[in-house]
Image 1 (cartoon, rainbow, N blue to C red):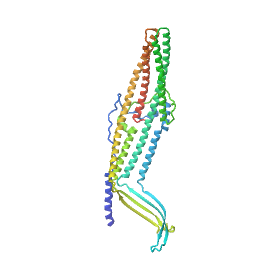
Image 2: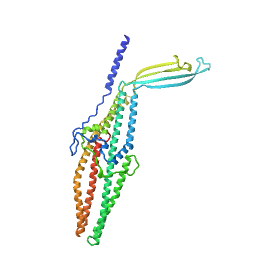
Image 3: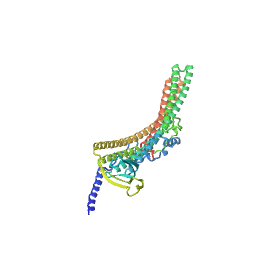
Image 4: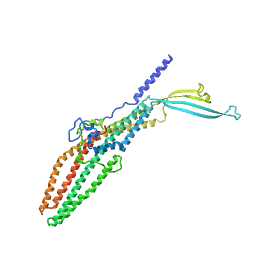
Length: 464
């Protein structure tokens, strides 16, 4: 009967503790964000997207693939991200270990000098031998340890998503730098060709001057025109070196030459269906990382709430203690104890309030960060789509422009050679317009390639 009376309040106490723990820690709820509608772009949008393609399917250039492989194996930012994953895994193991009792072993020898009760200046030396094990176990009655474990899981998932975000950005950076190099190579080829042609023009004008067909102004202008093209070559060569060096850093190499193909050989495999903005929540690794960071901060807020309540700890110990080795492993030397209690610091409530306020502020910061990243992701997709359509439109008109300007240069040169009244400035203007159009044509092709790469990254492609 007495045992029954004891069990009732104990059961009531346990039920109260469990009910209270449900009230203290709150269940996780995903941050509110609705990405509806379509992307803001000139073209139409379908429900499919190119994010499902592996990066090796998107890029056909084998030299570019080799560079991406090298970057994925050696890039230092990616290696840092992998170490962050290992750090998060260690944190998760620590949070799991908190559920288990902490066990400590003890082996000690203590020597004491004792006096007899009657005095007489007599002393006796004694040696005490102790061998024991002690244990402390904190019960998770308020859900603090469970929240810490969920926080560690979220931290691990965030670090893994962060690694994928680094990978997608790395692939895009390598491809964009590679295409920059190809465009610069093409610009260098056009500029060198232009310099050669203008050198020939200057020589032709000189001959015409010697035959009294052109005046000295035309000779000077033709020479200046040649020097202008010649002086543009070192600038392009320097841009090539800088771009090669930047790409080398992405590959964790010392700055040096980059083996590459040509701009005209580039073929990208892509299906320009960006899908809908809501799909970014599942595909963009940085969006996933931001959500996991919010969840980590959310569980840390739960921990701060639980710190207001006492911790239930159970301690136990046992072992052998005696003043002689002969009595060590006997019943006389055996000891053991077990105890349980609630522990709550008395004078730190102000600290707990400050910690809770800080945790809540960090949680709200992660909410804003999640929303901001989602909006930026939608913006990046829209920007890439707009850039692609703009480059595609320019390509069509640029082809016609180049054909017309090439014809204009030919006609002006024929007039210059056959008509003394023709001014060399007409030829010069036509050549300048042609060179500008050729450079813009190269830029159009480069913009289109960059737009596809940036769209692929903006949709979250590259980490699968």
